[in-house]
Image (cartoon, rainbow, N blue to C red; front, side, top):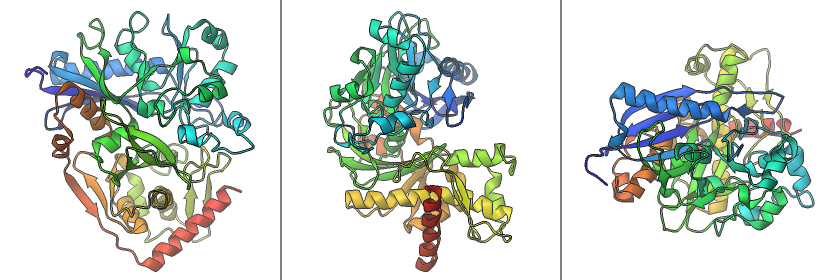
Length: 501
């Protein structure tokens, strides 16, 4: 690494926006720019993004940082990428044009397809191979749907012209040159969310390819999470050859950015969805309680590290729904103010099963419900029920993790936009009965991608150096009686049963 390269760059391609960050050696944000993209809902249960729009927004974000902060691309030692996982793009390798919009991770159009693939009705029939249940969540069924339902794709697959990628692969391919010389690559954390990668040998699994109807020729090469995959096109937005050297799915990136490097370390990210990950070490731990077994990261030639994950589809997006669909608030921050108008939820529970229920239930036919409404209920009770829904779902996952790992979790590191909500964080600590800890730098997802790129390029030396950058901002201590905690959680479990009926 040259000493005149004082910065590392990272792209955060998320569910609602794309952001470009520049960090210095102390992992401090030097500059950032964000551009939102459209959310498209062509049919009930369908969620789509325009991958070309996302690519354009990525370029806009990079240009804005360089122009606004006076930073030159030549000052970057490397570039990391983190991305919304499972969101699926199939495009033509000769033209670069997608055959259709990207199918987003929240989309449930493949529900019938997943049920038909289940051996004797067992949605976990492939768990030993991929660590995952058959679910609309993952990329494999989405690829099969595109092949079977989008004009021209099946023929393009047969001719070798069609290729697949999650958003990380799409961006790496374009940033390294696209149709002429683009690198078709992904990392183990993203490949592990396709239902096509064998969880143990970290290679594409022939049995799974056959089950999903996917050919090997359309898939990217699986690489580690921290190595040089290629260099940015000198004629592209970076204007030079910058090594792309880090690639992590967003939730694994947050685990890495939180420096959860030891077995038993756990974090929860409160974003569009809610994702709780627990580091389980160098051997995959298979869940008996509805959790996902997933690669956490693989640094260069080192052994892969695995995690147990509990995925919640609707968290911050529920606050957005209250704002946009009901008009109950004008901004997301108002939800806390309204929730504080009342001392408790008044018996009101909101189960946000808009895309079914993810972990630990995996009920794709569950419906969103508001339970416990009476004449007593006010807008404050509804606001509280929205916030508490995130915490209740996290507790379900927390308990499942302790059962699977046989480890008592004594604290929870948190990140994501919703951690700014003090009421939610205090309730999370109360309902879990453990301290909840927020770091000073809450941009842990994109920081994880920067860390991976920095390790690969020598910008940072090792894990010990990364750990020096993590600093505590605030801790919420449990302050709820055992009886109240039990009563509230019992009410939640009753609401879950009604959601699944």
